[in-house]
Length: 310
Image (cartoon, rainbow, N blue to C red; front, side, top):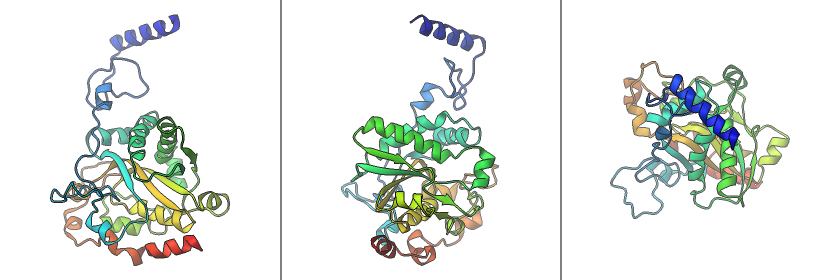
């Protein structure tokens, strides 16, 4: 009790003498914290709103009827993605975007568990969620990981496992940080159009032979990343997992870039590498829709299922 009181006194005194501003709103923080973000900003990170695609989470136009319990975007209606469902907490903008930048570029790793808690709340709301999941983070190439010092998707995956164990103690969860490898050093996705992003990650991900493949085979996989932009990375990783024998793949991210917003966001603003800004020329070109990329990815959804059974 005395120890707690002393800690509070030191914390409050330090705040008065050296007030630190919130990195999101600029208001002085009321207490010492490893994450310089105030409670108000944490409590005002809105979840996605509106009618969302039942499969990929894309925001649907207003004319889609809310009476349809499982609405699909045009791409998913034409050809279902290789994952069962993709969910995210909110749109990649405002405070959520700033928090992800603090995590990735300012290396504020304590942010990851709190963001993971937000994502976990949407994971437990997934339809037909299996009772046992193998949790696999999207990997960085070894050179990029060495430069950054950590993989933000892996930190989020660790936090999500902890949050899910709290929310659903009955679930069986296993974290497989090495379940996927990025064997090819892809260029930054920044400034690439949706089709260019798919070209960039094609063939980049593999499930390593041996122990990793044995762990994946027959398992329901939860794939974790920080941002879902065009779905290119989720698509490529899901195909790699299913080719290795995964029974199913579900995708969870902290943030979701809506496709329409991604095409309109201005380029050349000097934003960090994960920005999805495109030039006016890229935005005006006729992009190949994701559902037309079956041949491009090398294996159709049906063929992946046949390989899984064999």
